[in-house]
Amino acid sequence: MSKHVNSTAYPLSPLKLTLLGLATLALAACAATVRQERKDKDAASYNTQLGVEYMRQGDLARAKDKLDRAVNEDPQSADAHSARAMLFERMGEPSKADGEFHSALRIGPHDPQVINSYAVFLCSNGRREQGVKTFLEAAHNPLYRTPEAAYTNAGVCQRAAKHDDEAAVNFSHALQVRPDYAEAAFQLANLQFDHGQLPAARSQIDAFLGNHDATPDLLLLAVRVARAQGDRGAAQGFARRLQRDFAGTEQARELAALDRNPG
Image 1 (cartoon, rainbow, N blue to C red):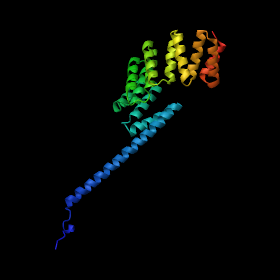
Image 2 (cartoon, helix red, strand yellow):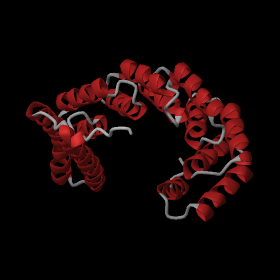
Image 3 (tube, rainbow, N blue to C red):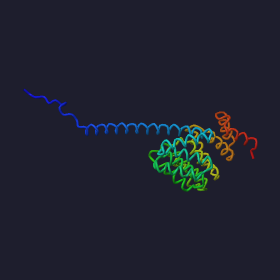
Image 4 (spheres, rainbow, N blue to C red):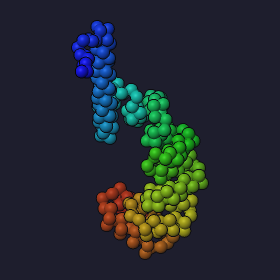
């Protein structure tokens, strides 16, 4: 007849019970810490979104309150630091903005949105060479979803530095990445127009408008180019299209002003 061992005959020692109790408490504390960290991150994300929205509305005081809270709730949030940097720039404190961008880049050195925002800041504050380099870094980042925008921004920054040849190359890169990107088409045609390259500008505009949706900027530029070429019929056609499809826009008002003062 087999004998069954009664487990109750071998009770756990007080030391083992204490260790098990401590392990249970440690696990519970760890879980509580993880939950609190998750809550803090969620709160920081929410306050960052609120801060950015208040910035868009021009309410900088509320924006600062929300973004300060976001950074306190999650000091390791690259988004919160980046948004705070943009706020300081809006407040006319570029040194503080630069510091916040450096914090954001230290946390997320490969975050394409942070890189792009920093590039905008650099170009806006006269540090154009570094800004262009940073834009191109964003454009070459495989995580960046809109490299065409980064190439175009690099070109705009180069134009501000009077490096138009390099700008034209980057506008062309943008259109190679995304042929229907209207801003790059406008910037390239506008550069050509400014340099008196009327056939090239007209060709660029006609090719884009023949295959993709028009924008008020492109149509207004098309009017100017056609008028400079002496092509009154085409100019009138572009003007009617601008007035019909984009009535009430700033570009339609500019066209009306051109018509009142053709010289």
